[in-house]
Length: 350
Ligand code: SAH
Image 1 (tube, protein in one colour):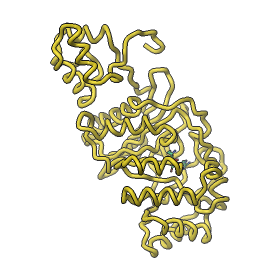
Image 2: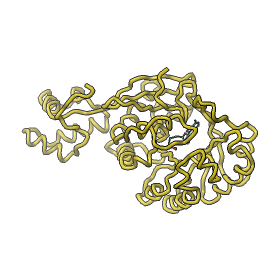
Image 3: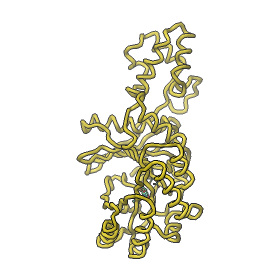
């Protein structure tokens, strides 16, 4: 129950060795630990009662000493394009959102890394929420598992991709995000390939360098939105202390170490960056390091502040980039009707 006082330990916070010691101390065989770990991680079964190769006695023992805090789907909405948005309740009652995005070839899970967000990007609905706390690795992992199940049960298809594009800034919760990704990719976990995972960031230069140093194997997307400092600072205040030149240097370093192209996410807004000067600045920025561009549709957040640029201007951006050898794709929004699209996640219930 929520808020229940418990002296029980979170079983997912201890490793196999410690669990072996626990079983031995209670007169059980040490290999039980491996069985339990397989249930918890490989099969994503979190209820001791469902661990069918354990005896009643062993299950009762686990019940007595351990619990498994987990997330629950508080509310589920489905868009007419098939996209599913889950409002997910954490064990302390806070809510984040995670989205399942189906296409003909893929099923993508879009997961959150923080409750709310501390960055004040002026075009994003999540920015209007105060940052309450970071998610822990299990809460991130469980969002992936929830969507994996929905993919299998409701679409009869496997989960193919994961994007960290939900609520929050993943690089401000780096340790837990990495732990969750390690689980998702490990043999003991979901065994997903790192190349199917994309982390999207506002572009914190120092952390991009750290990721490169740490030898991570997933893809990097950077929310660029403007390649001219004054404009980017207006859109994304983080740019003040973390300007385009620092960002470009960090991305070059990332590429040098990982040899993975970066994706830039870019929205064209009327009267903000919908002109040739901005398009050329983006082109110059792209030339600094091998990269590709997703020109993403603007999802209105109800404040009337911004409007999507005209199709011909977006076409101009795309032409200019492609003529210069940079892959640029125009990305249609998904799940707009249920506020599930990029930047619309704001725990809004009717
Ligand atoms: N904090 C991370 C991940 C969350 S946002 C980041 O900034 O990248 C995921 C993507 O949605 C980012 O590219 C972000 O710039 C974009 N986005 C935010 N608000 C949006 C909106 N209203 N319309 C379209 N894209 C938006």
